[in-house]
Length: 74
Image (tube, rainbow, N blue to C red; front, side):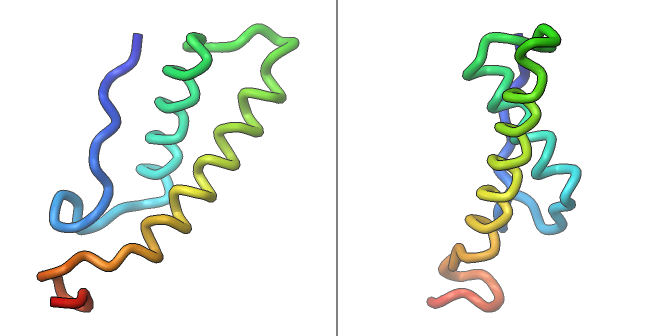
């Protein structure tokens, strides 16, 4: 149904774009909902979920401290 979501934090990914984060959110929503493309009556809920997960993922990535990386503790 959908490919695996790739890791978006260092050292696995050095340059992560908003498009990368949104693609991961879309894959997550597709997996959880079971829909590759939702029916018209589910489109708004699907889109809202993608937007919220994109935002939450961005916040998560910005707040992570990875030990042993530049700017990290350790």
